[in-house]
Length: 260
Image (tube, rainbow, N blue to C red):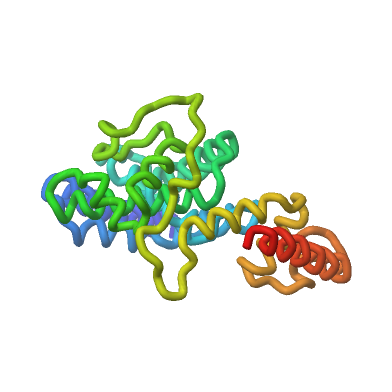
């Protein structure tokens, strides 16, 4: 049985190696799609473990994108002549990418809205580069993400280590200069979607709550957990969770009312 299992493992790894070579040498899109599909279970397992064990402002889907980066790095960095299985190498790369992500975001403390908007800007830049055959202009990125050019540049100030090449020439690195949040505005209003300036203010209001209030609000309104489920996660009675939700709602209403 052991010999049979080892043979199966070698055959599977040989197939993966062929796909990796096909992708690297020929740019075979079907090969990379097959590689992602074959290792999707490993990816989802690792991401789920991090998402369920740690309170994070990021959703499972956000962390999944980080994990994908690790898997792609594994495809690029795996030595095809290695005796180690690719699945083991991929596991380590995905796990490492998520660990680096939590370390970096924990140190920098960038607000959730900034991470979300920066992600959209990065995705738009990548997509437009592929579509246009050149790095996009700041105006083109701004139009794609529905944010003013000035707003895009201010977001980049928060991420000083930007790798968006189309913005490098116009972005001034000044570590002492705080971003002007008033410049970050939507180009046009979209149905059923808050303008970016309103989302920023809403998150700033949320950040004015206590740490436990923020956790409860996030789990109740964003993760759609019941009061009982939240209580079990935080080690608090359901009645206490109910009071926290009520007090948080009053605080948010007062602050948002003063803003309007």
